[in-house]
Image (cartoon, rainbow, N blue to C red; front, side, top):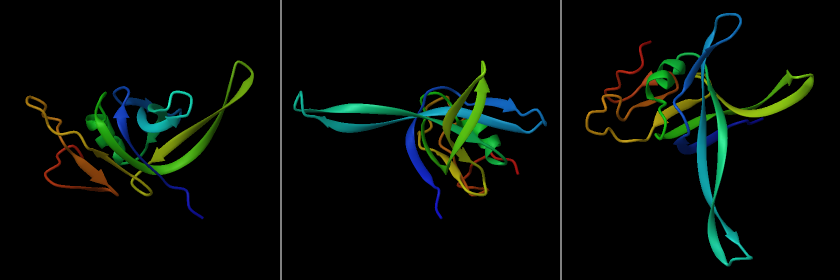
Length: 137
């Protein structure tokens, strides 16, 4: 069976680092994608955006912590997972793209701008690429 998602979009916010009750750190951020759809009523193409919640675990957390910044264009590969949680006595569901070095990768597609030492970086499947200093294994 196959459960794999690949997304390219801009980050809505900087990655937020959280800790589980058992002390495991992870990162979350929202990735915004856009597609164009044909609107029959207006007879024109219209932009349609979709927001995806992304959760990053393991060694990729270090990369997300430094490189996942608001506005950056990012490539995310992982698996979709349905999270169930209870709030105010009601059961809620949320789909999330889950990424870790075992079954996913992250890559900033943004170019380094002047004065931005965080720049263009690449990380996937547990190994840094190019001259990337963001990941410390």
